[in-house]
Length: 211
Image (cartoon, rainbow, N blue to C red):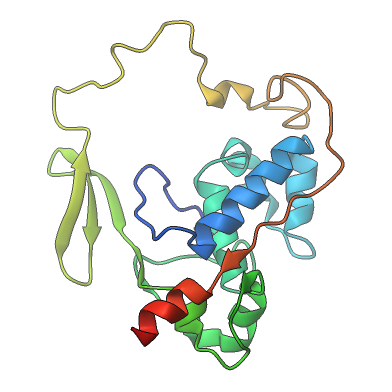
């Protein structure tokens, strides 16, 4: 085999975002609809058709329910890219493909077609470099500035020691053989059979620019 280069999962343990940011609006909408409609791994595969890379989808299926992989794929969707397009650490430049990004941000309302993409995806979008073994800790670095932004998992510190023993880890919902999501994931099999749609008011960004 060969590397498929689909590093499209974005670690979601540490996020800072403006209220109503399109990236988070889209991922919350998607997670809500997928859970309400009891999505399985088959449904998730279909989200990436016609060209899904199945090895990533199946190896990390639990992270497409509500985790780093569904976050990364929905950021790609807003940017107008394939859901499994890879990311690199550093600043995201959504305006590199205006046509697709405008399509991906069609749920941002109140802006004209000629309005700059900066208004559709406000502020700067930066992906930090993650290193779990950076000088003995888990650090997040803005590599372009050589700046450590956050650190956790300090030596000899365990923030999980006070958790209740009967809390089951989400990874236990993964199945080695079969279809993920048919068992253990949902408390029942009741499907909503409908989708909710989230819209973002883009005029708040326009107002800030005009002030």
